[in-house]
Length: 386
Ligand code: FNR
Image 1: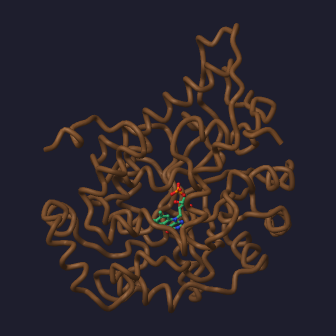
Image 2 (image 1 turned 90 degrees about the vertical axis):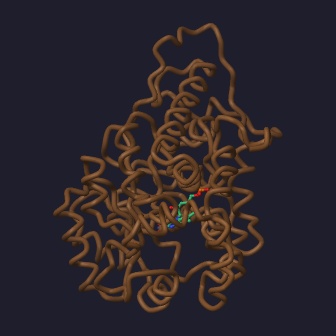
Image 3 (image 1 turned 60 degrees about the horizontal axis):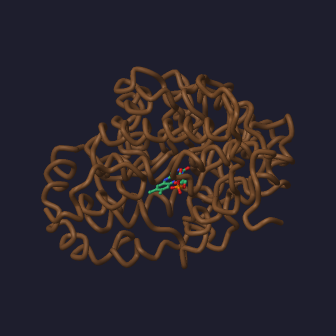
């Protein structure tokens, strides 16, 4: 091991570097990459720097408390783990690991429609019910039975993702032969990662789509994934689709992928409880404005009608504080939880979440704030000033 790699991972960046060494290239790129020129991917992170925090002193900050309400439940900090398709390929039974680490950290875990582990396995690992993310499928009868199962397993919150009527243009996936053809590219990449191959590739089986075994053919792989996307993802998503869901889902309903005041109002009119301001981590519309920039517009439109969460580009505690100060009830963490888990398994993810909470605590303390509910836009300054 060279000295360069001999360090204790702390930040999302550290875990990303280690994940790159552990994962076969096509999986690392599938997680890391964005759509097109990856402009929105970069902007999501960089635009947090537009907001700077007001340092306040001479206050008693001995009792800073990061606990809060998010998506209808009490959380230890205003954070949840985002739904990530195929998370179960990034570590052995990855969704079960994610759910267990999230439960221990006191934050919600969101299981993707295209997760590897079935909901039953995920809930059993966490000893609590997770949130469930839904992609709308053309087969509405199947969606109804899926929802019934989700409800029967005790899930209270459904996150309906609307920013993927078609899949974004993710060139790294094509370069790696992820979307068909060129299987030899992946075979060569796999050959350089024997540890992953044994630990996840062999011991991590079955690699099915845990929620979709009835509608996705075959036990394995990205071919099935692509065939599923092409055949089943419903590109016709309208406010009526949300009304349809609302009439079938009595729990909390969050609509993920809303990036404008107009769309937020349509979501409110259709009866949802909240939105997630998200551009899918820059994986869908490349050139979409960063979510931290869009957040104030959506918060204003939502008023008291909708809870507003946000994601895309959140990497550290001060990012979380900025989003909450701008009116979000909390954030979803996407890639960083996968990097931490791929790098160091459950312990890595637990360490990352503990570090995130500590960063939030320290940031609040140095801003003179004791409660999450006391964070507001008056604590931010624009950089450069408007
Ligand atoms: C995602 N995302 C996602 N969203 C969703 O609703 N369902 C899904 O199955 C997936 N799958 C998925 C896979 C991978 C590899 C990534 C990176 C992302 C989007 C995700 O929930 C979230 O919106 C973004 O990841 C947030 O951006 P950051 O935190 O990754 O920058």
